[in-house]
Image: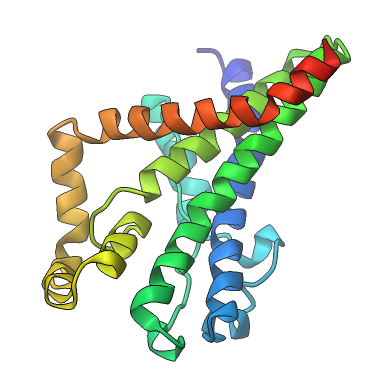
Length: 219
């Protein structure tokens, strides 16, 4: 891969990654506030301004290095300060806050897909916007599926905690300090890939079902 192609590919993923991380965190901050926790709002995170969510290492350096090394893009925003104890029903409300992030990524993926459809409809010849739209769909679906992993510290883990009986839930919560180790083990055991494909396939089918009337209208 030459330097021009490398710069082009980084440019393709820059906006999708930035907006995917921003929407994920902003959605969770808004929902946390709705259920009574103003911690994220007080920290200025209930905004769609990417600058409020960017972590220089997790949002810029790590995605760039990972793409250079493996062609795979991964990143994260600044930690989102949430105090579940301030919510009206902490155990129940935790699930809604956790689900709002992946839900925001699904909506973002859907919007990128609509953009891709209109780019094709208007016969845009330049490859770059098509590639950005495709990267937008892929990035948001991947981030949604990844965060739905039902392990401690992930959004999926918080949903699982919320629906488990109290005793089982608090036993599960004791695993949270080992969440990163569990994640690495799942990656090593090649469990993550099938999970991403499974969730991504379901979400992709749902998206195309939603946009099918638009496609029929434009054809």
